[in-house]
Figure 1 (tube, rainbow, N blue to C red):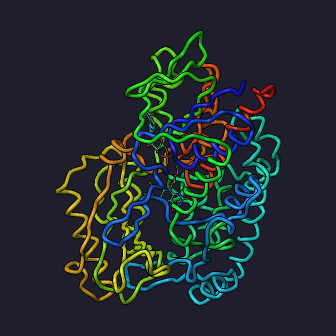
Figure 2: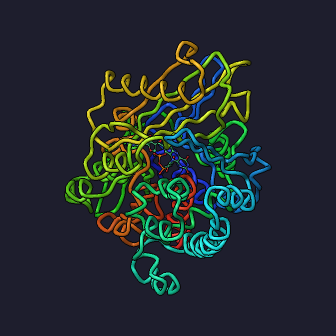
Figure 3: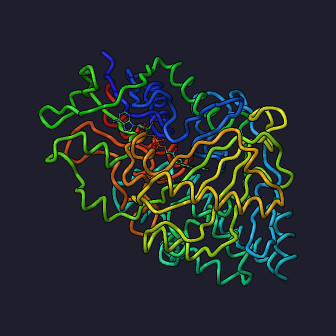
Length: 490
Ligand SMILES: Cc1cc2nc3c(=O)[nH]c(=O)nc-3n(C[C@H](O)[C@H](O)[C@H](O)COP(=O)(O)OP(=O)(O)OC[C@H]3O[C@@H](n4cnc5c(N)ncnc54)[C@H](O)[C@@H]3O)c2cc1C
């Protein structure tokens, strides 16, 4: 008889595990608390506007390709993607902008124009970043379930070069003098959830992901990938249940026995939870939890976010698909997120306009805007504060583009700490899980497998390899590999 696996949640890591375990011959059921599947990558449509609710930077296309190849498909069989040019635009305090092109040569030229000699330095730096990318992504990522330090010791090159001792900020600052170029080069590691000064230099492979592999956009947004993963899982008989919050993990003889949802008990042999790790442990009796409340409170969390989804009944004259408003002091804002958590005085923010690339994501003559302000977790989140920041960022956008847009807003929705907690059971309302700092890397992250409850496994951005869509997809594979190895007799 087939062994039954229950998967909690339907984010990228859960869907990845559902596909691999379904393919391996398990009977798999996915239980999602929300009405819509996809977790932080859900999508909603309103008045002709389409909004991806979370991820918008499609980086590391090779990880998506490898995932679908494992099921005999290519991404292009399932959804259409386009490489963006410019990949993104960075806007600085003095009004100056840097547009990042779609090839290394192109970007080298931009660097050279800003700082003499930096084009060649960039080429040399990216060569190193590519070596790390090949080592990390092609080699380590899929082979490191984060069980012990010995996994890392196998990769002596990293240890020898001390890439886990130096941080990415000082590595970049040693090579590049211009503050704007430094900011641009530090941007990719923000995806890992911590300050560049806290992120090991090894993660400079993100710079290769950025400049070397480019920024892509699926035609109907990230949700194209979610739908393709659900279709892949359903091909293997995986069943999906929405509006089904798991309230309890049932344990018998120190092994999982089933789950309790709001109206039923479902028995199973194995559980994989892609819900936030800290929440999943709360579904167990206290004695069976591996990590205490203190442990979670002492972690370095990725930021939360204040988000605005806006529909405009006009076109924006200037700006691109991805726009980074780095027009205030980065270090001050970073301190207000990590060192001295409070609402930021003058935040950096990100503005996404997918209708600049695919105009079917907004009605004719209209534009869909998605604004993201990174903030510390667990701040006091209320309507008045949200409105204050809304007015602040709209003003900065209007000043930049020299166009009034506030009166053209025909749809507006905000999303912040409260919704992150209510919708995803997210610790402190974090947006991207646990940051990848030196002490929260690889075997130092919460484990994929429970030490206290047999057959209970975890996936997602709080475990290995870390935050972001590609790592979450890999996490679903790593956990599936462990289960398949343990249950080899199915
Ligand atoms: C605003 C934002 C922007 C981002 N931008 C990017 C980007 O541009 N590029 C990128 O690569 N990454 C980005 N990320 C990060 C990326 O989206 C996440 O790392 C990834 O989607 C996490 O997937 P996951 O499977 O770990 O978790 P989730 O997507 O959070 O999935 C967990 C699921 O578990 C469900 N759940 C929780 N509790 C229960 C329960 N008790 N019972 C049943 N179900 C439950 C939740 O509802 C959710 O569906 C962004 C994230 C956010 C929030």
